[in-house]
Length: 106
Image 1 (tube, helix red, strand yellow):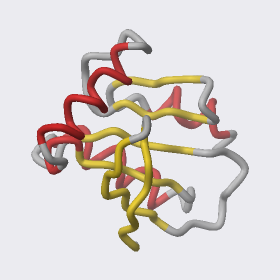
Image 2: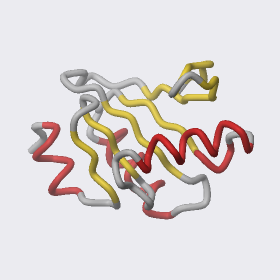
Image 3: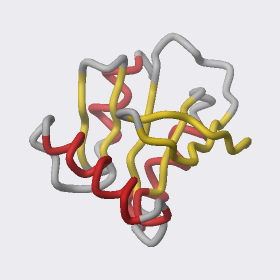
Image 4: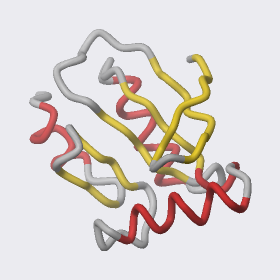
């Protein structure tokens, strides 16, 4: 895993990149560092060898956190984890079956 400085919605934030063999989809996880379901989602993606990036929103500075939360509201999203796939589909919560279907996993 590597941390990098990235730009989300025009604001700099720390994004963690998790290596994986499966790179068919762009996968971004919005999480909270203390959330058990977020940890399970990140572990599921890692165990499934899916390349993904994640951001623990609660670890961002207050200004960045507000911007991120505003961006998520555009998706009508108010829960974590929130998994954005190919910038088109948002899956909220730990939903293995939906993740498998969306990512073409067995």
